Image (tube, rainbow, N blue to C red; front, side, top):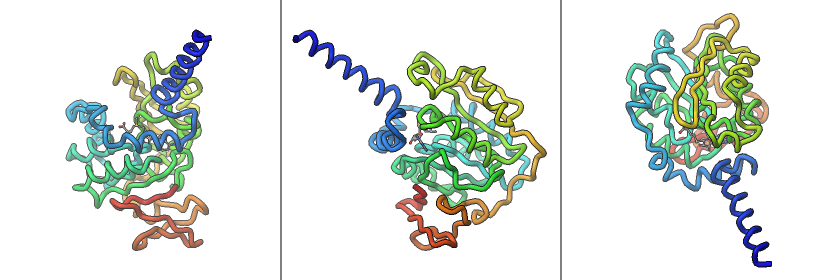
Length: 274
Ligand SMILES: C[S@@+](CC[C@H](N)C(=O)[O-])C[C@H]1O[C@@H](n2cnc3c(N)ncnc32)[C@H](O)[C@@H]1O
């Protein structure tokens, strides 16, 4: 009898380890994922230990270079977390554009906003799920999403959304989970070949997978179709009401659409579109 109890406890612990540590709540719904990230937001940067030079080499500098010829480029960072991608992009010094950082975990975004305060005029922070992006088609000159796709309830749907809001000719930069833990995330990860094929099927061209970290490849691609001019979009032309699709207008403590839907501004100027 005692043996059975020990086996049941071990199985339960293994299940919890898989669901909460490896999958980070991915099979328990987006609220659980965001709750876990919010819970440990203050530890995130210390746990990750990102190195500035490494970040600039792989992310900030190449992305800034890709966008250098545009007059006022606009980047969307999906699942921005504590602002890893925006930080390296703005620190690079060559990037002259603006950025929207979006994440479902509001405390993560609050830390991002604090770290990127020197560039606050050029950044809008949103609390929002990645699976329905509140922007018109072909809005962004680049869309990025790092270390996050496998935690979304429907990674394929989120990718489709990212490609929808990217303008033809724009850059997609996403990470693809690899390594031994990827096989513990069934339905959420792709082999390198399957990922590239999926991106091509979504209308992306020049898809290139590059080795990056032990657990992730970096994938760069360009959206096909007749390129439309980039840059120079006012914020008002960019943000849409997630309930009715009407443009959102900034107010004192909230943003409001013409149908009267209100979305509160959280501390740090973060717009809550959940
Ligand atoms: C490992 S972190 C990566 C953060 C950042 N991109 C980086 O590379 O440091 C994963 C992020 O995905 C966010 N996330 C998970 N599911 C999400 C969803 N459905 N919508 C938006 N963000 C989500 C989490 O809140 C978390 O901040």
